Length: 164
Image (tube, rainbow, N blue to C red; front, top):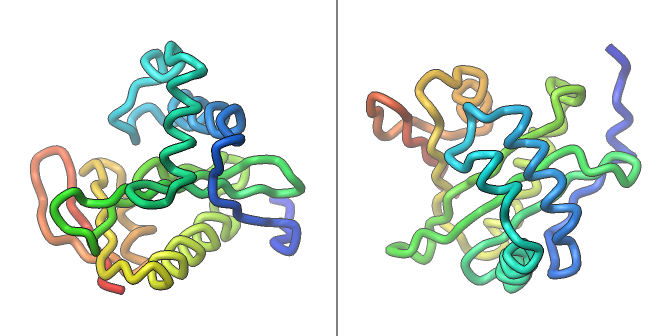
């Protein structure tokens, strides 16, 4: 496989004007990896432009949610979102984690997570949570490599966390 020049990789927090880019990468994620997400592609595809804009506007406020898009040469190839735990202000859940399959195994997801962890520390977040489907061994291995530990296992998913 070709080497990826990570100096051409950048990460940006979503703002209110990014709704079309966010919609495109989110739909790509749902279509390519339907087994990894609770949201179904058809449901997301049928959302209105106003719904996408509202979601991006909420994320741009950075009070209860945020999402980051990873770009390689200005092409969106990776996504990672965070939502505040409604019961614990210092706990946020990582959601919508996805990297274009062509770029997997090349350090893109690790760069995204490093960025998310640094942002979280800056925002005084104490704990990151992730729910991983029990049969998603690649994701569980990656989260463990990123310092997450399993706290609970159900029949369908593992709850993992990382203290910051």
